[in-house]
Length: 130
Image (cartoon, rainbow, N blue to C red; front, top):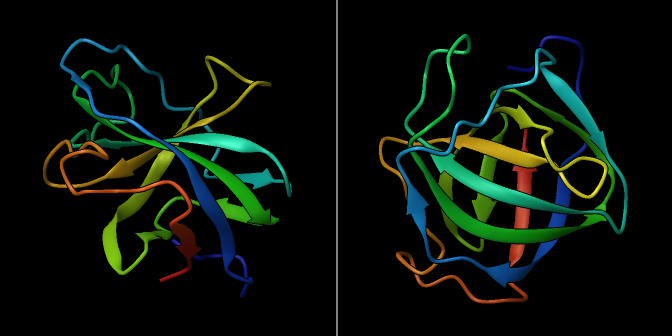
């Protein structure tokens, strides 16, 4: 949901593929619609079917961890691409492990893991305003 002007694409590289899902994760969406990410930071990519910002995010699939190569601003609604696959849109951010990393929650119709879709380390990750 780009509502504050245009911005550049944020890019990264997948550094770790994850292969598990949970139905009881209890993540919390931060109240912020955007977060700045810096070059060199590593953040976790997590898919979810969750839609209610006021309740815990329990149903999740873990894609992996990505290193940010090109800093910028991530916003709710940004498209998330790994390689040529559109994996959904940024739903929000869980900061339970910050400052180590954010969990970037990606809305999808199902909880997908990195293993489910054959992700590999070194694939390009892109966050694009829609």
